[in-house]
Every structure is written in structure tokens, then in C-alpha cells.
Length: 262
Image (tube, rainbow, N blue to C red; front, side):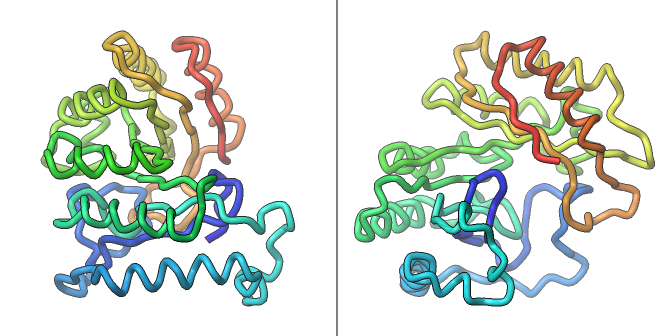
């Protein structure tokens, strides 16, 4: 796909084609009303598909396809290989092995300037296998984009609808950010036509500050809203002006660099 946040072509690796996720976010575009059953990602097939996708971009064939034919010239370049998809990628049993495979493909294809990006809800960072996978990414041009969409337990549960406590997410992000700088991804939206309460944004800024004060490093905070039809009809997008106001508050209260994606 062509990604605004990547600034070009991002090759997505979907480790959850079975749509299984440990969150049930109200804004997610994945329809989980009918699950396809357990699907295991085949390592050899994934290797072949990554090499094939890289060739499509390099040789320009991707931009002959109807979906990509209007891609601006400035975006016709490969920026990253991203672990994302229809669920939480770090729940995949062989996550460490997948990270190693992606690193090998990156080396084989001589993509030294291409990032390996993990887009994650940070819920599994405390697991040893996931930590080993993150270390592989660190050694091979990796970047972690961790989700943080709330400032309080109550609002977090309203958005994420998970049995995992908010404190686990905060602790995991903090510990991971002590090891390497993270990108924080934060999606804000209207719920039942109501914007996020001001006190929630204040609490969100306080959580970011707590991470920094505990020795965590944050290289960027991405502020954005829903761009595709969400899971729930009561979820709608914030305006660009509303997103800019949140970003300004984050910068003022935390000193962190922000980027807004309307």
C-alpha cells in the first residue's frame, strides 16, 4: 500500500489473516463477525511473497496496476516493510522467526535504507519471545510504532474493549522505550458524536510524560483519526482542526514532536 505515514510504499505483512486479535477496538475496520478459522502464516511462502512484492516496486510494475496507477511520483518508492494486518502481530506464535525472516530478506535485497516497522498495541512486549523479536528488529533497521489511544483506564476500555489492563500497556511501552526510541500512534475520534473529553487529553499527555520521566524515549507522536469505515457506526472522525489542537496540547505539555494525519 501507499502510506501517508511512511511517505511512500509500505509492504504490509499480515500475521493475523484469521482476524484474531486480543483487542476489539471500536474504530477497527476489520469485520470480525465471521472469522475464517485458525490460519498459520507459512514461512517459505512469506519469504517468496516479500521478494515478489519488492520486485514489483523496484521494477515499477506495481504502478501499472489500477489501484496504484495514480500514485504521485514522489511516493513511488519503497519505504518500509510493516508488520500489521487484521490483528495484533506480536500474538503470532512464531513472531521471532518472522522478524528474522524479514531481516534476512532486507539484507538479501540490499535494502539498507528500508525500515522494518512493527505496528503494535504493545500488549505482548513483556513476553521473552517478543522481546527477542524486537531485538532482531533493533539490529536490522527496525522501528516500533506503539498504540496509545487513551489516558485513563476507563477510556482505554471504552475504546479497546479488552481484558488487558491499561497499566500493562503503559508498563510495556515504558520498558520498550527504555531500550529504543518508539513512535507513539494515537487515534482519536468521536464516540456517539462526542469528542474526547478535555480531561482525557490531559491524562493522555500525563501518561506520555510519565513514560519520559521513567527513562523512556519517544521519537514521534502520530496523531490521527479514522480514515476507513470503522467497526462501530457510533465512531466518526475528528476534523483536521481538532487533531491539530490535540497535537498542539501534546507538544505544549510534553515537548514531544508530533505529526498530524487528518
